[in-house]
Image 1 (spheres, rainbow, N blue to C red):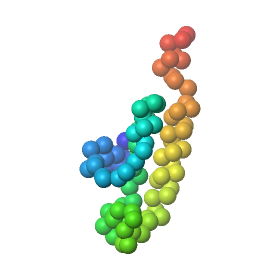
Image 2: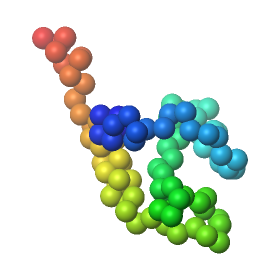
Image 3: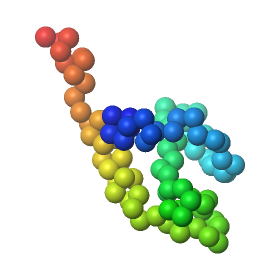
Image 4: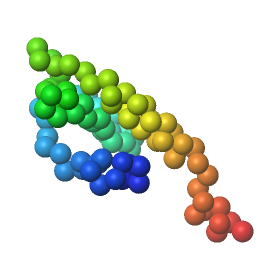
Length: 87
């Protein structure tokens, strides 16, 4: 993510949120991570969902879609470290 969005694009030390999520049960069985794609701050969509003031920031749609495309491309890319050592 840093390669694509820079240091400001990844908030690895974000404050915890008090959300109810069953994803932890999946992580007990397979490796993974939870990703939060931000919606902006202040007047650009900064309030939490399930709030009367919530207004989805349409400008983040392309960022979210591109994230998933880049993740799939990285997953499907040949492992160049192993390929070069194979001969």
